[in-house]
Amino acid sequence: MFAFLLWMVLLFLCWPLALLAIVLYPLAWLLLLPFRLLGIALEGVFELLRAVILLPARVLGGRP
Image 1 (cartoon, rainbow, N blue to C red):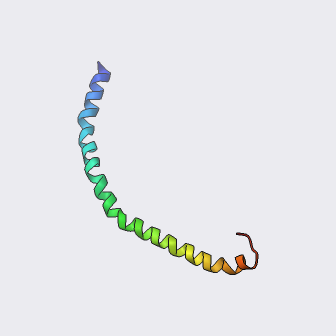
Image 2 (cartoon, rainbow, N blue to C red):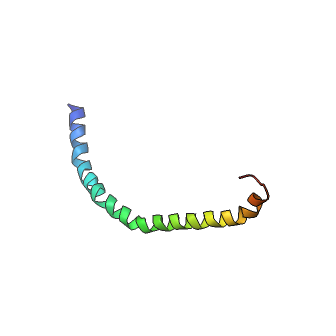
Image 3 (cartoon, rainbow, N blue to C red):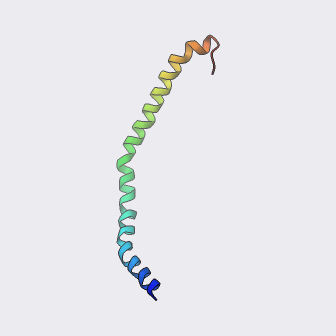
């Protein structure tokens, strides 16, 4: 009986948190989307710079 009451208290306390998470997660995802896109763009720029810097070594027969 005590376990059932504990489950009922947990249900009563946690359903607002679950609804809040369901509502706020998409909003947080939308707010963080520009930072993800910026990260993807910066990663591409850094890979391009790495390729340009390592090009002479690759042409001369260095490791790939």
